[in-house]
Length: 446
Image 1: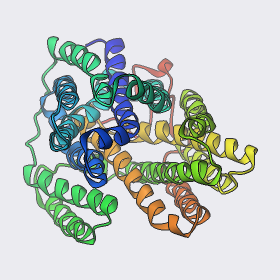
Image 2: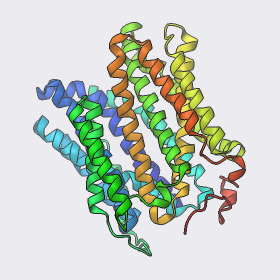
Image 3: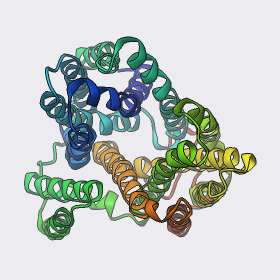
């Protein structure tokens, strides 16, 4: 697969997943009404998907490293589309939940591959612009999702939103599987016990946070400890020490968790503020938040320049500070400049962190570990929102200000996490002009 098609496939895969989550949120009330489902059952259409995808992302990334990123992407896209079509004709809510779990399994397979394909196609110094384009497209998808979902549900019913993905996933899945892919030079043995322990830990963590289940959180802690002990002893660990053991990668993953938690938790609170405190309908509320999407796209597009001039450390630290300021401004939603400015800073901060931190994670991995690196990045972006919404939901009963102050503090913690990231002098170039050689002291192990 050539670079252009690789970039298109990576962007399209990320957009499909982003659209899926946003259009489903719009469709859930109608789904509940027409299927006669309870609120808990409808919530499981989201929770079941989230548990499946979060628990399998890293192992799915390793499968891509072992058997080929294009192959993993193609199978993931075809399965994701088939599950979507199945949901569109599902006879009842039980089928919808089951197929959403299946969709999560295939989503876990395709998401790390969208980053793994980019790492295989571009040298480390040429990754920033493709990652920026990918993030900008996700921002547009997040903004368009509620509008597209609302139009489909209003005009054709809730089932229509699940047919939205069928054609693009089928076309891109077939194209990915049709061509020949170079076999990996070395096939690292699969760490199945490690994968099972990590899946149990992540599933327990996500379920515990989403459902407020202490038992699940206890399972997450126990299996997480067992996973760490196993990884230290096994000859072929699931998480390559050369990637996960690097301070810069750990810090970048922590920043992605903090940034996505602050963003998602704030948006959760903002829905109540806009609709209850300000008395706006859902569409009017969505219009107030448009600065978020606009500045997320703009920030993603400009991030490669910031990385070249300032380096990841200063870029991400500044972006996390802007994100925290945006959260604080939204404590004054009745003041229009604070409302619009808050949403704008949320988008600018998150879009910048998304590109810069992902660049650090994927750049540090060699091509043979790119899938695992992509899986870790996607896991951070699934755990973070779950944490943010859990925090916001727990504190919302005390008013709108308290959860936003905690979320702002969480974003500020990300400023401190920027310290291990490389400075400007550590990055020779992040533009295509540097293609062909990697001059960074963070070597891309070949």
